[in-house]
Amino acid sequence: FFSQCFLECDRAAPSSMEPHRPKYPIESGPKYFQRWDAYDADDDLKKLEEAEKLENAAKEARRKPPTPKDVQHLLDKQKDDSLQFLSRNTDLVTTVARKHKLDPEMLQACFTAIHLTKAELEALPSTEQMKANAIRTTEAFERERNAVRDLEMQRLIEETKAMAKASKGLTKEELAQQQLEALARDMELDAEKIAVCAQGLSLTQQQVASLPEDMKYNITAVREDAEFAALRYAARTLGMAPKDRVAQAADLEVMTQVIAQETGLEPEGIRTTASCLQMSEAAVEAIKGEAERNAVKGAREDPVFGQMRLAVKRLGLLHQNTEGTL
Image (tube, rainbow, N blue to C red; front, top):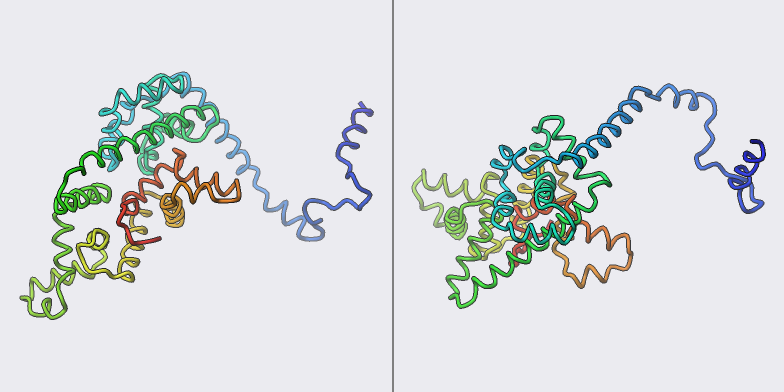
């Protein structure tokens, strides 16, 4: 026993003859006791219990995974079209599932769990909530998360191909209309309202002043109120209204704060994700630091950041003509 103790001491001993310096500064006097006074054993026990619950939930989710039907009532209210994507692309889901040696229903369940918003996740029954958290965070479901990442990339490729095919042979007006509808869909806006807002923004101050009072009130609201920030941003992004970089940046900030409040995401996280998504592949590969490069790739591809990417999409920042920056 003592031999083993001495062996462990030798291993822990510093390799040089320099005096050993502790990892943390030595505390003495009142500070030492204050640190112990601040120690909360109940809090530590709670953390251990939560970790144990998550581990048990991972085992239970592996044994009996949640199906998309378990969260159907929530997905029906989702602004994202994740459920519609799964139902429209059963062949693609099956192909990706086979590639990763997974059951297609398991892949659908994981795709569903990862795409739940914070509010939707919290609204789940406690058992299903723990299962969803296990799928989203534990090492046991790393393979499933990789498959979801692959599925999302295939989804993006298919959507890009579809848009490119649809745009061939279009007139300038038809292409502009297609871009309007695409941005409206991304930002969850009405295309006609964007066009009406663009008309209001295109009026001069003299034209606005000459309008009847009730119409002037409505036009002023469209041009200035925070409620219409998204419509103004979309109209300027598409070139349907006069450029105004200062106003565009202000409207983008309003939209970011609103979406952050709705989803429970951090505004800074949304901004960082947007910056990562707006980088070209060449720019990403040119990043010298491996850790930073991997972090950028994670923001662009990892299912964990799925809600961040959806928030960026809702801001209209993935549109090719976008001029606004975060």
